[in-house]
Amino acid sequence: EKTMSKPTVMISSTCYDLNQVRVNIAQFLEREVSYSLLMSEHLSFPVNPNINPIDNCCRNVESADILVLIIGC
Image (cartoon, rainbow, N blue to C red):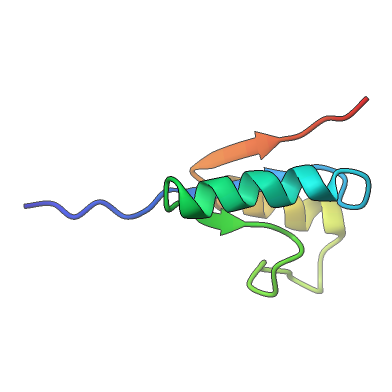
């Protein structure tokens, strides 16, 4: 019998203006569907100090199973 691991979801957006939206989505994904989260505000977010922030973000997107991109107007 094969054991399935929880999908990893990266939540991406600008952090400050969409903070509450990020929190609401994260709470839903953790509580209701038990997904693992990848968010830049978490201490567990992998950061390589030898590369720039955009490249760090791209590397983390590649490691996620699902990307939730929040775009505000």
